[in-house]
Image 1 (spheres, rainbow, N blue to C red):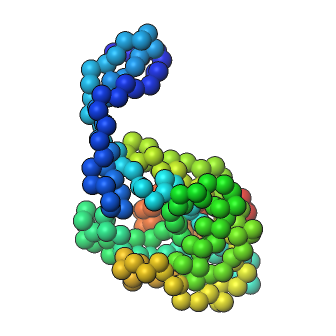
Image 2 (cartoon, one colour):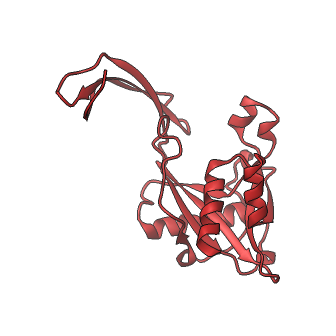
Image 3 (cartoon, helix red, strand yellow):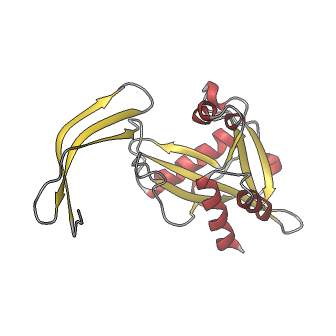
Length: 213
């Protein structure tokens, strides 16, 4: 049936499954409220929520070397869901530094502080929170399953050689991560070739190139 206007949902039932973990599955039964006031049949919809914080910050760290080449920091680390999809995929997923925005970290200053904290935690790089800048608009990566919003930010690193060993967050799932400074054009070429299949990272790379070149 064609719907000329969407006026929301009528909730028939709403439950949360598996509360107490890192993620919660929310299971709702809904009717679509159509523009003419009629209701659809009841449908079942599952989606994911994260109790500790709804959104995330995606941080592109970069520097310009002595030859003038723009280099970006890529992080290689295992990812549990990829391992369960295909063990070869889970061995070392490549992405930029990123982290969860915890409850209360909603304003721009809090996002800057979280980005700086993640730079140290995941890359051993010290950046001043006030040096963190926006890298385009925020976006929803998986709106059909998760209401998480990605806030894209960027920070220039003056001296990558000054980085220390990343302290990590203490989780065993942070073990085994490695870091690599790569020329920006090479990183984008990897994405084009399918060798860097991470959506947020590719978007951040392309936004950075559009911004500084």
